[in-house]
Length: 478
Image (cartoon, rainbow, N blue to C red; front, side, top):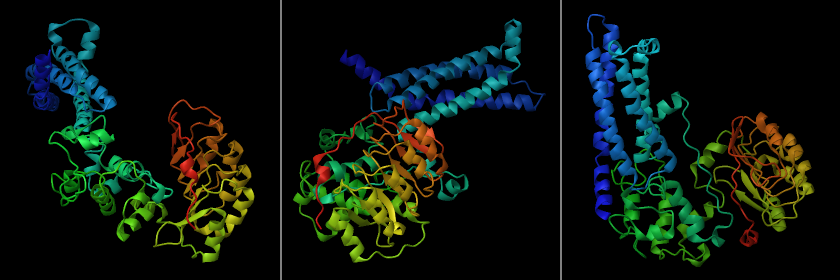
């Protein structure tokens, strides 16, 4: 049995070679058929017929080797299924089209009628090849392999936006688990598309601690206490364009600060359990970690806030007033006066406090009000915040009525409604917010079957649980 499994794996490795044979012959058949339509003097039917028959047979062998290759694992199931069934459709339609090109050998009115449209069948096969090849390329190189490599000017011309990335923010970085909340999110965002649970190039995946430490086909990629001896780090610092650099060209590059955090974690001993505060930090690392509390490390922050009008600088007295209540006022960047208001340590925050916050309304771009006592009444005021981009209302008593009040928040890009009393009908009030792209609406009073679209927005209605942890109530140092 082991011999047969190894033999199947060996045969599967020929799929990338054999798959090009039917592709070439089908494209050639299409070109000859097109030439025959354009030039009535030449009859290419016999050649087209011959190419279709050979390509159908070649596609069968390519499909068999592809099946054996898929058994090795390491591929995303949904994409693999699409590629597999489309690959089966190619020889089936090739054989049907071959028969249609033998119209003189077969009878029947419906057959003759179909034969008159045989060129369209051939065109359909070519389009089918393109789609099948797209999914095959995605399996091999990951999502966005071709799209991501397009020149920026072309992307802008055709209106192709880069894939959006969730802003990476850690509430209280010194209390965070160093691996789970700092290092793993970086690896997941930058590396896991090629080295994840479903796809592991080079036999390496990093979706778990065990697989990360195990390494890949060439052995371990991490050396405890030494970034210089760790292949993972060595791949990250290779020059742009180097074939071994990670992430590879065409993928979202890893930032310099993210590389420094990974190097710090390796040098500190590859600890998976300690908190950030328990690991020695240089002034530089402490500064980089501090930025994680505002998301300043993420370039998307600059994009989100780039077109907002300037806001006046907040006074120390204004900041200290809210800090004394347990509300953290965090600057977004040194380049502007915008702030994130986080009420996680002040669950007593009420509608009256929201009225007071209006005194600094021009500065607020992100408002975190989860687990507080605000009501729908607060959303009347919140909707008037001129620069509000992201709003967290999870596990509050907000209802559909509140969403009706919120619909005038024209700058809003993100809203979190997890654990609220909203229903599907209430979400339609948000249709008028053209800038709104992300809505999180699960564990709500209204039940949603799956991820749905709401105007310009993507609505996450997942069934997974986000429990409120005791560690979320840690008091910030004032």
